[in-house]
Image (tube, rainbow, N blue to C red; front, side, top):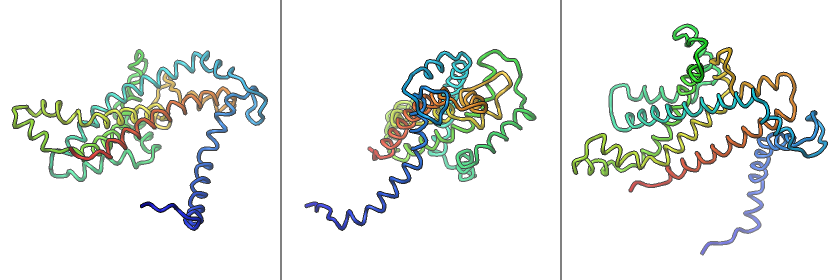
Amino acid sequence: MREEPGLLDYARRWPLRLMVGTTFVFLYAPLFVLIAFSFNDSRRTARWVGFTLDWYKAAFADRELIAALGNSLTIAAATTLLSLILGTLAAIALWRFRFTGRAAVDGAFSLPIVAPEICMGVAMLIFFARVLPWPVGLPWPLNLGAIIIAHVAFAFPFVAVVIRARLASFNREMEEAARDLGAGPWRALADVVLPHLGPALVAGALLAFTLSLDDFVITFFTAGPDTVTFPVKVYSMVRFSVTPKVNAISTLLLVITVILTFIALRLQARATAEKPA
């Protein structure tokens, strides 16, 4: 039978619980303050006056802000689609095939994950300025192409990592059985492998969408003069003054990000925890 923890066990655990609680307060207290002051009935963020929803109404009434949000959602959607395709193909190729230099290729996929984002931004700036100049004055959404390419280069390795974690639990004998029953390689991939990757595909898509929607550094270096995204617009507003309108905008972006990230992590954990059939 399971023994109930005694007073000595609680006495030993309280320093750990205190450290964990202090860490959570240190990390999330500023976010809760930001959310609270987004409802402040005052232009000053240092003093609480009263509760109001006017700043959210002002945020939705700002046409430039809504246009920036539309740009960010368009970029995030295109980035998600392309990153999902490239990440899935790359993960399957590294999982299925053995070739010379495979370890180097595998390490290269981790480079965008571990490299500082500022380095990626500067590299993309040089690439589009010197190597592949992006035309100026293209119609929307073609003027977002440079940002989409940069976001895909940054996001699809994250998708590949999630897909490979799911492939580690796949029973290869199932695919071999499908091949023995007459299915071709593409039919076996579509009918056997991809259904197994379902949770990882959703998790990778949500992760890529969140990374693209929240990105500021890479977007700041690759955006053209007529292209403004949601994070860049918020940054330009903060440079002049921090008003509750900025807090309301940040709260909306924070809520969207937290929801998508939570769903992605839950699906990834479920996919990783499942054992091979």
